[in-house]
Image 1 (cartoon, one colour):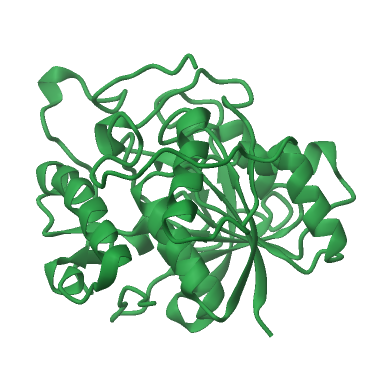
Image 2 (cartoon, rainbow, N blue to C red):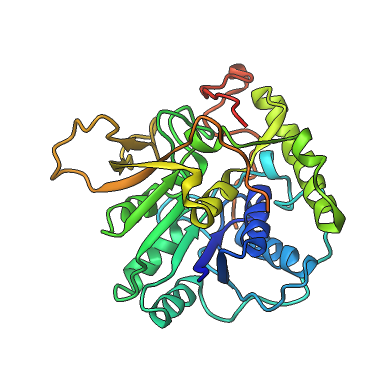
Length: 326
């Protein structure tokens, strides 16, 4: 029986690929898509989700727009990675429908209640919608959450933090402390899932061509910033963890979110070696990739062009370690 999922996303190139993977996986049933401001403004991420669904003829998949800003922080978008549309690269037509007339948090709650909790939200953007779900609908609790975000000792928007958690650390803190089973697929895992030329050569058809164009644009950033020959398909790894649980090894560890320090804002503090007292941290499943991980087949926003921690003098300094194993 397929696993029912709700994809909460901020498309974004890797979000689009995650959506395509989810819909192409017979192991999954996509109940709907919710959108949040993150990689671009809410207006653009919502349009992008619908544009992708329109392109593949899936107008049966409902889309609900959610939070247009973090809980307490100023909005920030990653146009320096995803472009001004959030999906720069392919020439996708404008969306042919509007999102649902209710907030993403309400839509998530409806689906979770209807399934009596037997649904897996897969957030691949900032966790604002999920935090609102838990606050506004405390009776609508999923059995688990599998998310893309955070890292063990890595960062991409700052030296200390991954983008999704950094964008809304207060929301992330509420989700991680919410008493729900959480699986964190972080940068330490997704930076090993590089989609390169040899993978792109296997893509076929009009959808394959669209994905190739997405990755051509997305890959240019990663070549310049990291010197990589491929693009990490971050969000697709979270989806693949649900459809193919054996793909990523997980360990039960405590995780807390830094919401106090500006320098380390959004850092996921993972108690990897179990140093914290058991009463002080909740435990979560933290993703760790096998040695041979392969990619799965199947506003007011500030428009900065560089991450906020990087001054012009910092150049292309990166504090990211990776092992190319796919």
